[in-house]
Image (cartoon, rainbow, N blue to C red; front, side):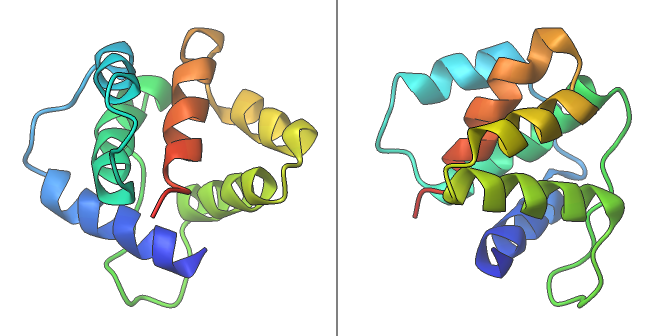
Length: 115
């Protein structure tokens, strides 16, 4: 999970000044190109989180050993997805993401599992 978190942290660094992306537009673009890789999903995920959560997520710089609350939530969701524990994954998504964004954020989070 640390390699995925590192990719998300790198995307968060590069996205700080970039425009935010609409959750549904990002998913529509990524769902039509199934060969997209983790960095592309990480970029889309980070750009959409503010809209989905209603607040800016906290991601530390790459290499920082501590995890923010947002990073801990993400790694827990990714562990559940990797273990194919759909109940835990759904619980974690439902605990932070409003109903209208759950499917899209779940899609983007699962996309982070790609290499």
